[in-house]
Amino acid sequence: MANGIIIIDKPSGWTSMDVCAKLRGLLRERRVGHAGTLDPMATGVLPVFVGRATRAVEFAAEGEKEYVAGLKLGLTTNTQDTTGQVLEERPFLGTLQDLEAALEPFRGEILQVPPMYSAIKIKGKKLYELARKGCEVERPPRPVRILSLQAEGQTGADEFVLRVGCSKGTYVRTLCHDIGQALGCGGCMSNLRRTRAAGFGLDQAVTLEQVCAAAERGEAEKLLLPVDDCFSDRPSLTLKAGAAKKVRNGAPAPAPDAGDGEYRVYGPAGEFLALGRVHGGTLTTIKSFFEVDRI
Image (cartoon, rainbow, N blue to C red; front, side, top):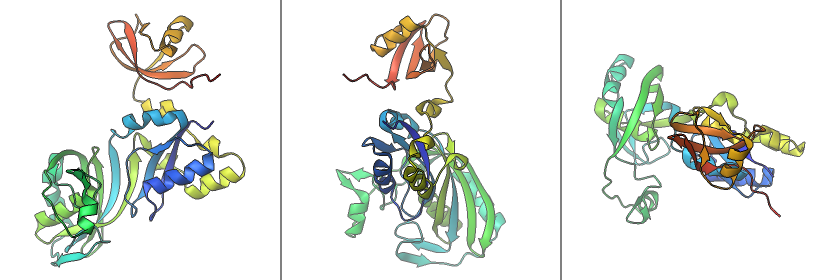
């Protein structure tokens, strides 16, 4: 059975779930999930978890992300990107330096009001469903963290390129909208490419065409990365046979030589067993990843 992570360079026009559905067929595996939704217009890094590796999605989705976005100033739309209905047009008469000066308040911990065209639920209703009916409801602002924000260039009189490093839950199109409001002319996002997510970059990504070609050769599984790559920021801990057996049975195991903290836990043969936590010389399992033997 297919188990591992495949980093897809998502094409424009596909939803993240479209990509997962395609991979279910190509990899012949029902258990497929992604970490971090990309809007249909967006492209770039979409980590997809296959088989037993789907147990890691909850950890990967929490990670930091990086994007390259097109910022269109002077235009405000109902979707906060150029695919939406135009609400207002006001010319941007400033310079790249004016934009750069306006970015400073958006770095660090900020509050964002989620866009109406989003999957966030208010009183059980998804916002985009309400927006499509012409309704707008009050959305409480949410804290997000902008780790880095740079204007990388100017592509037109009112068009710029932004590079954004941010926390989970950040809406880059809302960031573009808010920057436009701060400049007094309005703004929206013209394109979006994710360059990093869950610790994976574009250099590790493959296209759906490459996966299809590999599947035709019977080699699609060779594109899968091991699931422990998702936890490469944690140190490794290799157990002896007795302790590894305890982990496989879901029991605490002794780890007298390991300091407190989270570890990638391996068995004596080098097989990845679990993400674990050591406290006071005792190892407990946070999430197991070994394939359960089936009779």
